Length: 493
Ligand code: NDP
Ligand code: BG6
Image 1: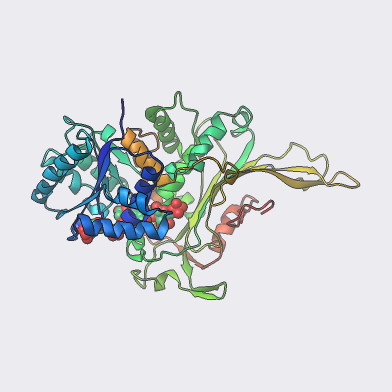
Image 2: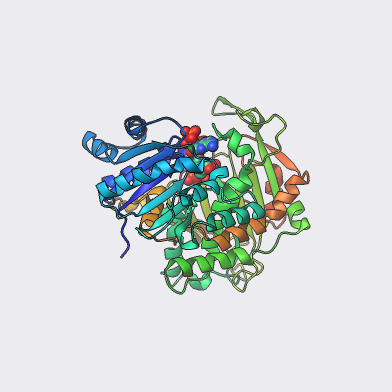
C-alpha cells in the first residue's frame, strides 16, 4: 500500500521555484488535508537555518496564498533547513542525521522524496552525492527523485544525464517533471477523448483536417534572461510542454490506466513523429525574436535589451512548426504548433479543425467545424459549428456550444505542482515523462537545433504581435490561418 507520509528534501530551497511554486503547492496540500505525516527539508548552500528558512517561506506564502495564521504556523512547523555545499559529496553527510531525526519525529518510515530544483548542472551530481551516504537505498522506506526541467540540453546530454542518474536510482524511482502534464485541463483531454463515444470515431485523418496547438505568453523573459538565452522557445516550451500536449491529442487509448500503459502510448507518438528533413527546417519552421514596442501605452523592451541577454543573441523567443505523425490514425494530417513570448495574450489551446462537408449545399462559405480545447486561462471546451441564420434563405452562421471549468465551482482543482507532488509521494508516475519519450522528443527536435546552430534564420517580430509574418505565411501555404485567440474565452473569438 502506497503512503504519502514522507520527508520531502528540496535541493535549491533558497531559489525561485521553491518559494514561488513548490512551497505554495505543499502548503495547499496541507491546507486541504492531503498531507498528514510529513516534513520538508530545504537544502542549498546559503547559510539559512530552520527559523530563517521558515520566515522566508512564510513571507512567500503570505504574498501569494490565502492563509490563516493557524494554518500557516502549523505548516511552517514542518519546515526545516540544512546548508550543504551541493557539489561536495562529503558535505551531504550532514543530511544523514537530519533525515533520521525527521523520519523519527514524523514517523515517516524512511520514505524520502528528493526534489532537484537547482541549476541543471547539478542533476547528475546530487544523485551521486546522495548515494555516497546510502541515501538512495530503499531498505528503510522508498526513495524517489524528482528532476526539474530541462532534462538535458539535446539528445546526447539527455542520454548522458540518464546514465548518470541511473547509476544510483532505478527508472521507477525517477520522476521527470513536466508541469503541463499536471494541468487539470491537459489530463481532461484524455477523459474527453476516451470516455465519450462521439469524439473518438471522428478523431483521425478521415475527419480531421488539421490540428493547431498554441502555447502563447504575453510576458517576456522577465528576470530569467540568463537562463532563457541558453534555452530559447524550442527547449523551454516546445521540446517538453508542447510535445507532451501534442502526444495527449494524438495518442491511442491506453490498454489500462496505469503509468506504463499511458506512457507507452505517449512514447509511441513521439516515435511516430515524422523526422524533420532539411526541407522541413527551411520551409516548415519559423523562428522569431521579439523587438521593442509600445503595448497599451507602455514601452516594452526588445529581447536583446533584456537583462542577462547578450546584445548579439540569436536565441528564438518564438517558434512555429508544421509537423506530421506517421501512423494509421494521423497520416497526412498536419499539426501546426507555435509558442512564443511577448505575444498578444497568455493562452494555451488546442484547435481540432474538422473537414468540411463533401459538398457545400447551402453556401460556399459554410462555417468550419472546430473543437477548441482551452488549456489556460479561462479553461474551457468550445464546439463551433454552423446553424441557420434566422430569416430568409439558408445562410449558415457559426455558433458555439461551450463548457467552462469555472462552472464546476464546487470542485477543488489541484494546481499542476500540487497534483504532481502528490502523485510522486503516492508513487504514481503516470503524469511524469518517461525516459524513452524524452529521448524521442530530443531526437525529433535535433534538426531544429542543428538548423539554428548552422545560422538558420531568426525573424524579428514586434512585441505584442502574433510572431513573425513568416509564421502567417507558413500556415497560409495550405490556405489556412492561425487562430488569434484572446486571453478570455468569449462566445466568438
Ligand atoms: P534559482 O537560480 O532561483 O535557484 C537555484 C537554487 O539552487 C538556489 O536555491 C541555489 O541556492 C541552489 N544551488 C545549489 N547549488 C548551486 C550551484 N552550484 N550554483 C547555483 N545555485 C545552486 O533557480 P530556479 O529556482 O528558478 O530554478 C531551479 C530549477 O528549476 C532550474 O533547473 C530551472 O530550470 C527549473 N525550473 C524553474 C522554473 C521557475 O519558474 N523558476 C520553471 C521550471 C523549471 P544557493 O545559492 O543557496 O546554493
Ligand atoms: C516554464 C518555462 O517551464 O513554463 C517558462 O520555463 C514558461 O518560460 C512556463 O513561462 C509556462 O508555464 P505556464 O504554466 O505558465 O504556462
